[in-house]
Amino acid sequence: MKDLISQNLMESFLPFPLDTKLYSSWASGLPHDGETIIYTSYMYQISGILKRYEELFPKIYRLNLPKRLMTASKFLIKPNRDELDRSFNILKNITSMLTAQGLNFGYLYDEEPYSGALLLESGFINEYKEYGKKLYNFFKERGVKQIITVDPHTTNALKRYKDFIDFDIDIKNYLELVNFKGSGNYVIHDSCLYSRAMGMYDNIRAKIKDSGISASENYLVTGKDMGSCCGGPLALVSTKDSEDISKSRAEKLLSVNENVLVMCPLCYQNLSPYVNNIKDIAEVVS
Image 1 (cartoon, one colour):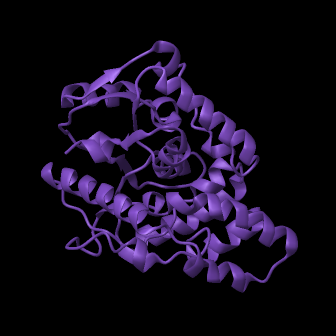
Image 2 (cartoon, helix red, strand yellow):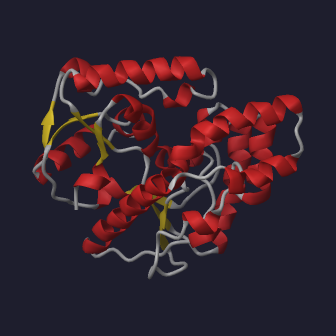
């Protein structure tokens, strides 16, 4: 599986075949380039189909199926229209909030590459470093100096490159840049990467509080050191264990509040089967 993902990335900047024209069609009116770009890494757009790819990867690798089957998957494996519309609306709202802050930025549309997060989070560090060099050159050739990310996995992957290679591009997550208003009462499921790996827990909590959203807290469930994972990262190793963790986490959150707020597309996908009212933060603020 490592070889399959790595080869795809080195050949096409994508971990598996994607209909990039479709997944970039949410944007209109943004410049096609620029020193600063908004960067989705397709995470919101494809989060609803990742489980299907997780099932397909081992079969292709284990059975040595022809690569053209993988290539055809971009036409066979697609999110439904509701999933796609939801992801597009989230990205449009993030763009609107950034624009309201007076920020100017472009977008790479269907040329956008994947971040390499899957390699890092799977422990494929050598492949992650090699892909990082290729990705860095890709951005430099296009004059990119600053990247605005929209999800924790992409943010972490890009920020971590500098620990291994020369990667002097400035990485900012949109939650660091925007102020927003919202309403409602939720229990917050924190992204492990935002809250612990990147130290954004307190800043995000302060922004949510200032926005007008009421957050229900329970230290054992939502504390910085106690909040637990959605289970998603384990799916490539064990689907059952991943789902068990997701269900357990959902039960703990629901013991605090029936309304759950997330800020990661993968957290949403892993918790939503067990939570009736779950929203991404970019669905409830503006």
